[in-house]
Length: 452
Image (cartoon, rainbow, N blue to C red):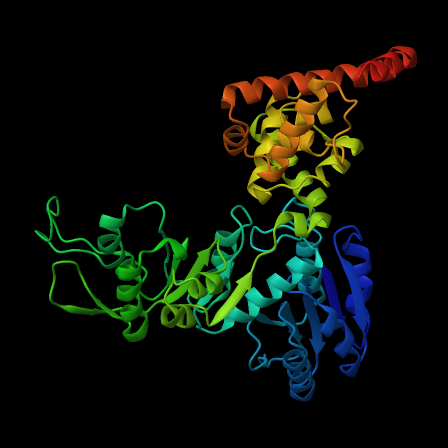
């Protein structure tokens, strides 16, 4: 987090240096409004501007700089005197009367070293890719345009939808979620629009759908591309006219909602392939936000590791202080096809099974096919290799091809999943035995290598 300070008196800067630990926040202090240009341009959505202003003229100048530089972080306007002018067009603003006591309270708030510090509405990571996502989210949230979020499973699309709602003018209204994959197709229309009593077998009472439940708030439709084409046509009519009819009903109902959608497929590619209506796409994807996969922002992995280890150590009452450096380095090189969700699951399991105070490679990778895949030698097979080594390399290359999916690998190999698991376990045991021998006795290790 960057805390940008505008204060001609330099008083806030002196207090910030005393109260803000450098590990939690970096301080950028300027003494003139003109000098705000560079720090505001470079700032991200989780950064903060604290401005000590003495009158309307400075307020207008600050508003101009914020809007021209696209600053989307929070602004705290500390105003001298009785008047509390607001910055027009600035969405995330708090206007407060200036006092040294209030300044200290505000700075202490940013000095809190909790695990969530630096997180953006539950999303962790300060990589360039994610900071761009946060900025886009904050800008999209201000208006009421429909937003489409897409990215691989496990990247945090629902958290982004919640952030958009929390930052919007609809934050005091409901946020309702509809997961297209969780509802059978025959019931999806009823879940979306509601139904009247007697509309179908089992409809014993009138029931509202998510469009009614989300009125005056935000409706989040997850896995959008899984909707059937007939349902897409009905959804289009609601998006166009903001009105709908319950299943089995005749009365037209109005809805005042903002639509945020998410999909793990590229929606434009689904349109091009004929699986998704183009007219619906262009109405739902007024703003498009792509969430990068974890492998595209590996620099965020240490922050995730620290966060999840701390969380699950508390949940499972384990005295775990962190992760061994070698294990962390190895985690940073893994492909993580399941993204943050897979990383979290791996750390939760490791915390449960760990015996020491630091998670080791054995804790994290004892049963990880992806880790074995990373050890596959490149190049063509050597005809002098023993048959068992040829088999090992072939199996691991198959796993590599299907991104570690054991079921798919077993199909390719023509063996059962149980047989594949048995072989992987044997390879893991062999690798661990070799590693132990290498440390205990170099001669034993050399003998083992020679026998391969």
